[in-house]
Structure formats: structure tokens, C-alpha cells
Image 1 (tube, rainbow, N blue to C red):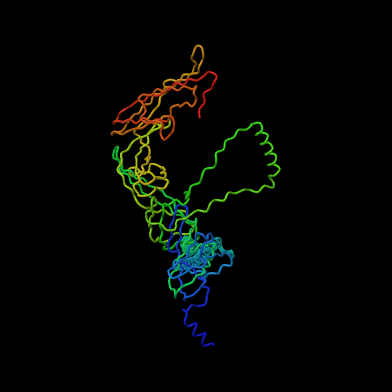
Image 2: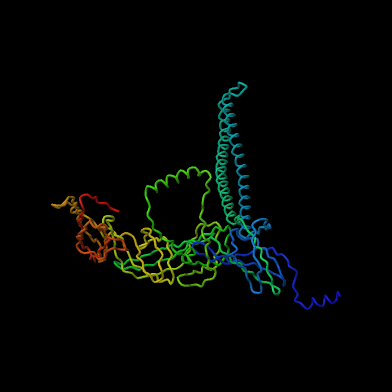
Length: 553
């Protein structure tokens, strides 16, 4: 019977008994979105055919099962679970940078000890020289007064004594000064060595891995045959992202310019894990944008008695005050974000920037700036000003998004003719769309407003009306040596009441009205020649019943 069982088993493939493998992983690639990141990790495995359980111990704790994938050719994933407790201890592995930094710190500490010993010797030399000078000086004073025996030295003895002690004292003073100079130099060397130790400490700290809370992925899998390859893990997290910004460089030639719009990305990541030689891709896809249509709520109208509403409100306040101590706070739960896991380089309005393998990006970095590309345009310039707000105009250009994808909103630094002139902002711009770009002040265009008339009164014989008249004159002066179009903006009154009559008086007529959907906002675009001066006159007459008051909103 035993031999029959061996024969039967030999007819089936050689599957090993299920075993548990505990291992770590290597971060290979990250695709970064503005508010999140998609991680690609590799787990190196060497497994015989059969069923296995793989414990990957170095994953972040914010993993979510629905956003986690594990796959490889020839591997069937049966289940995936996560554990944040009872973590398997992992022996830390020192990097080459950390080992080199530790050696540098040890060397700096050795130098500090050596110069400290030198300083101790220098202090001793100063003390000894100082004592010698004091002793010789006191000895000289004692001999000059005749000593303790009452013998008065002769002139020859005094001369000989003064010469001998003077030479000794001079030599001792020189030795004291030399020792003090050596001590000063040694103190300086100690300070330098101490600073070197501090720098070595900081350099070592920069190489140490960050402490982070980890989770273990428990992966049950079956391999069809012997497997010696990488298992790929894909998951999303909100611990990394990037912020777009722009640098606008303007090379102006009178009313024309070459504009370079340099796109930049500030990458941040707070995963607690240093990214070392990781392939980084930036995506402009907005993961927070709605992926489905939400129906509006019903708009149900009703009428009510305001007195009854006041009574109900008073009762509600009374009940609320009585229940405040027992009330639990109510928190809204945000919908889980959805993450795109596979995307091509350009897909619809999405652009991806392949940064390749970056050297190192620390796991606690708030922003590291990368320059992505530059978009060049030849544009015509114009000037704009709002009447009553700006006495000088602002230079503008119309730019077109020709990138093939969406421009994300971000801050823009303005550099004109090599000089930084300020900051601006670029909103979201779809591919192929145009947008107005402010390029900083243009000091050669002056816009000034003068009040011609402001008059209040009433009119009418049988029925009386209130009336208000306002008239203004705007002068536009060019101090430039070239021609440029200048647009000025003003807000003219608009009536929303039948018995409020508005009569406008403008010269010339505005070239634009209701700009950007703003009622009453108008603009005049005037071609300004070099050194020219133009005038705009505008005003209005308002008329309304005497029992009403004029308001503004």
C-alpha cells in the first residue's frame, strides 16, 4: 500500500508545502499627482512551486485594501491583508553614506580631543611663565631693598644684580607672551574643531533613516513553478504630491515681446521614507475632481407665517441650551478619493512628466523644485488700468496653452528684461485655450481722473423726484517712445428697479461692456501713439422718487 501511494503522488506536479516568507521591499517608482501619489514597489522572491504566505514588513500604515495591488507573471494572488501590530523587527541596514558620515564624525572627534590636549598644555605653559615672572620680580624687589639680612648692596653689586635679574625677567616676559599667543591660537583651533564636530553630527543626521510607523502586507499566493523574480506592489497614498508654479520671462521689444513660460514643480513627500534612485513621474491629473454626476436636491417652495417661525426658533434655542452638555459633535465623512493606476504619457487633458531616477528625496521634505519645460511665444503687448484705482498701467499679453494638456493653477514669478518685477497667478487653462497674463507695471502710461460735476437735488412740478448727476474726465498720457494699445476700465451704474432711472453719457463709447459678465463694467481700448494724450468723458444722471433712498450693492 505504501508503494502504491508513492506511485500515485509521483503522477502529480511537485508542489511544496505552504511556507511563510518574511521580507522587505524596494521602492522603484512613484507617480505623483497634485494631491496624492501612486507607489510601485518590488519584492524580490525565490519560491518553489506551491502555496506560500509572503509578509512584506516595510509598508506605510495608511494603506487601504481597495487601493492595493500585488501581481507578477506566474503568480496567483489568493488574498491580501494588512497588519499594523506585532510587527516583525527588522535589522536596520546602514547605507554607504551613513558609514562614511560616522567615520567622518569619529575623525572630527579625534581632532577635537587632540587640540583639547594641546590647549591644556598651552594653559600650563602660560601659568608656569606667569609664576616665573612674578617670582623674578619679587626677587628683584627684595634684593634692591637689601634683602632680609640688612646688608646694603654696593653700587657694583646693584649694577650686576640689575643686569642679571633684568635679563631673566625680560626672558620670562617673552616666554609668557609666547605662551599666551600659543594659547590663543589653540583656543581658535579648539573652536574650529568643535564646529567641525557639529557639522559632522549634522551630516550624519542627514544620512540616518527617518523613523516611521509601518504596516505588514500579508499576501497569500500560489506560484505555478519555481519563481525567482520580483512581485510588484502598487498602492496609493496622500503622503506626497506636487505644486505647479511658473516663471514668466519677458524679453520686451517696444509693444512686442518674446515670452518664455517655464513650468516648475515643487515636490513634497512626508512618507517618512527617503526616496533613493526612484523613478519619478509627475501627472497633471486632478484626482479630487468629480468622477460622476451628482443630481441636484429638489427645490421645494413653501410659504410660512413669520410670527410662527419666530416662536419655533425660540423653542429650538431653549431645547438646544438644555441639551448642549449631552450633544455629540457631528462630522461629515469625505468620500474616498479615486486614483488612476495606469495612464499613458498624454491622455486627454492629462500630461505626465518623466523625471527619471532622482538621486534622493528625503521623506520629510516640504518642497524640492524641479524645472519641467519652457513654452515660448511671440506676443503683442497691451496696457490696462482701472480708472480711480491705478495711476499707472499694467502690461498684459495674451498667451495660448499649446502644451497638449491642462495648465494647472499656480503662482507665477515675473521677470522682465532680466529683472524681477513681481508675482502673479495663472489659473487653470485647458489645452488650446487663451488667457491674459499680467506682466507687471508699465510706468510709461499715466491714467488720471478728474471730477467735473457732482450734483444732488430734486426735480418736477406736480410730482417730485430725487436726482443725482456725476461727470468725470479721464486723461491718458503716454511717456513711451513707441505706440501701444491701452485699455481702461470703469464701473457705470446699473438699475434693478423700475422707478430708478439711469441715463449714461460716455464719450467715446466703450469698446467693451459687461466685461466677464459683470453688469455695468465697461472698457475703452485706445491706440496710444508715442508721447500722445487721450481723453475719456463719462458720467450719469440718476432719477428716483422722493420717498425712496438711493442704495448700492
